[in-house]
Image (cartoon, rainbow, N blue to C red; front, top):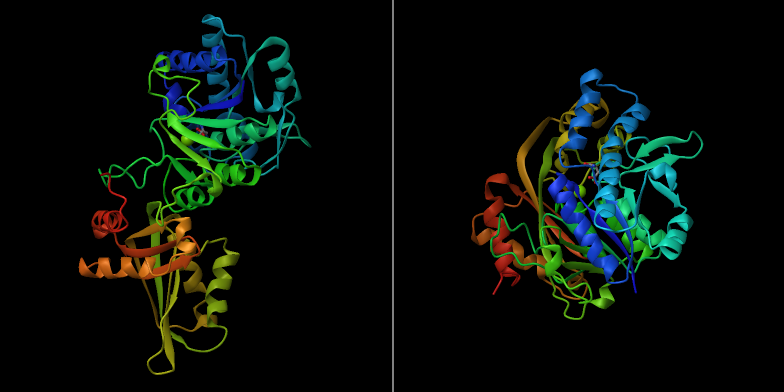
Length: 418
Ligand code: ASP
Ligand code: MG
């Protein structure tokens, strides 16, 4: 017998028929003798609608009331799934975040989970073989007893946190894709599903643009060593053997669990980047501080940074990227600090893509990035900026070359499906 968390996203609970389908997936695991906690999202589109309602009333709405409103989507699906389970003879009870309770910080709208008391749920596993159907995305700030939410996509984080709290053997993330791919299959049809991916790699993939899971959920899995299995909810529940230890999907796990480690595991990309170049800044100590200090104060996350050498020893150019959503704010911040920085002009571009190549094997192999630079150059793709770290490197290129660049790199590192 194992203890499992099964998490179902919005598209998996989109309507009553889909909820019935979820119930059959759950029944399969219960019948196999497992103790099961289910975490659900709101029906697809429901959260967007609730967010829009708040915005329509006031752009500057009270974050506590926002949480009250948007947390309601998950309340609906917990109740419906509990009914669906009871209907097919499975003992089940719904739980809201505050009922468990899932305690969080008071950062309404993007709260962090700080503690979960899972004792009642475990007791009911033992005494009644009861499935716990838990609302994802939400928790409670204990000092005020108010409902909080964990940020968009937060039910992944709820699921992993609950898996850690009940010491589950695995946290299954049921979604509309059947696993994690080497890159987005819509861009590269030859992309293949990975059987396993290390926590660190998945964290990079998600942070750098792959939209499979909320970044924080992977961080949490890594810290608490929760094995996470990404799989499809569209498979017919009856077609899956609950006893087989590897149904189709991708296991996110410790590096040590992966025997055949490739040098490159995957390629992620993000179009949500913007480039800003500050031209003709004086080449003297303190200039970087004068530029990046005000950006940090404005809470703007700077990602790639390139400083050119100054041919004349007098002035230089400094290029960096920021999230597109902060682009206007970043430009305004730099403009405001013009006197302190002292620069000629600002150039910028929003039609850029950051392409990132990821793999823990890079730690022990030299020349991985150099190979990419050469291949991109041969395709006439200009690199605007580069960053590297231990297990990944990223290049910023013109958005028009996104597909060509990703396909080129995907073949270059032998990731194409054979
Ligand atoms: N329903 C929430 C959202 O759409 C949480 C989630 O689905 O993970 O962001
Ligand atoms: Mg999601």
